[in-house]
Image (cartoon, rainbow, N blue to C red; front, top):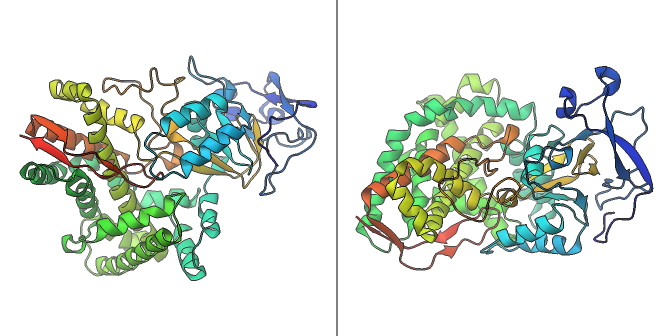
Length: 496
C-alpha cells in the first residue's frame, strides 16, 4: 500500500526503453524483439517488495518484470522527455501534505481559489501517489499524455457510485444508464456511440447555427438591458444553452420550462462532496429526464423532424444503438450542453469584469474575441478535473500501474502549469499559444466544444456591440460545486 511517507531507497534497478524515435513506443507498444530496432535504455528504480494499494493493485515500487514478458506501456509525458522548455519532469511520489491539500480542494464545493492549492501540489508532488493507490497528475504534459493514451480509459468513475449513499433500486437503474453512456464507454463502444451523433457537431453544422444563436443572444440581452441588476446566470447563462441545445435535439419549446432546474439537480452527481439528499434529488431528476426522453424518442419515430433526436430514433440508428443507449446519449448531450456551457458563460463575464483592462481591450479590438474565449477556458474552466481507469499495465510518471487503478487529472492545474504557459496566473486575451485541456483531449475530447465556443463568442460580440459598459450590481455567489465550477448568481448592470 502506498503510504504518505517518503518512498524507500530502491534496491533493484531495471532497464526501461525510452527511444522516442520508435513509432510503436510512442503508441505505448514498444516490443524490441519484434521491431528489429535497437533501443537505448535508462535505469528506473523499482523496489523488490511489491506494495499494494487498498484496492489490491500494485503501484510504484513493483519489481521489474521478467525480460520475457511484454513490458508495460509508457505514457509519454514530461518523464519521457517531451516537456516543453522550462517544464519540470513529473516523477510520482507520495507527500502527505500534498495529499491533504488535494482532498481539501476536491471536497470543498465553494472553494473560491483552487489554483493556489494546485500550485502548491505541483510544487510538492507534480505526480502524487495517494494512500489509496490513486495517481494524481497536475502538469500539462502528463495530463495531456494520459488523456490520449490507450492504456487509460473509463471505468472506475461509474463504480464509485456503489460507494455513495444511494438506495439499491435507484443505484441499479442509475448504473444501467451510466454503463450505456458515451461518457463512460471505451472503444469500440465509445466509437460506435459517438459516430451516431458526431455529424451534428461538425464545424460546418455548428456555423450554420450562428444566426439562430445570435437571435437568442439578442433576445436575452434585451431582457438584461431592460432590468438593471438582473441576475446574469438566471437571465442569460442558463437559458441560452438550454435554447440552443433544445433546438439541436428537437425538444419542443413548450417542454423546456423545468429543464434548467432538473439538469442543475442532475449535475450534482459529479460533485465529490454531494450528500445523500443531494444525490437523491440528482437521481430523481435524471430518472424523470430519462422517462421524458424515452417518450419523446417514441414520438420522433412516428413523426421525425430535422433534429438530433429524430436521428437517434431513426431505424438506421436503431441498427447501432439500443433504446437505453439512445436515452443515455440524449441525457449526456442535454446535461453537458446546458450545464457546462452555462458555467462557461458565467465564468467568462465574471473573469472579464475582474479584469477591466482586458475587457477594454476586447472593446477596442473585437478580433481578439476567439482568443479571449480560449483564455477564459484556460483561466477558469468549468471542468476542473477528470479521471481515467488503468485498462492494462502502464507506467505513468514513473509509477507502474495495474488494471483497475485510478488516475485523477487536475485539468485546472494543468492549465496553470508554468512549464507550458508563460505567466499562467495572468489573464491575457492576446495569448496565442493556448493548448488548454478544458475540453480534455484524445478520444473523449468534448464533442460539443465547437458549439460552446460559438455561444460564448457570439455572446461577447453582441454584448460589446450593444453596451457601453457592464458592471456588477452585487457580489456574485459561487455555486456549491467543485465538479462543475461556476456561479449560482451574478447580478449585473448593462448600459446601452
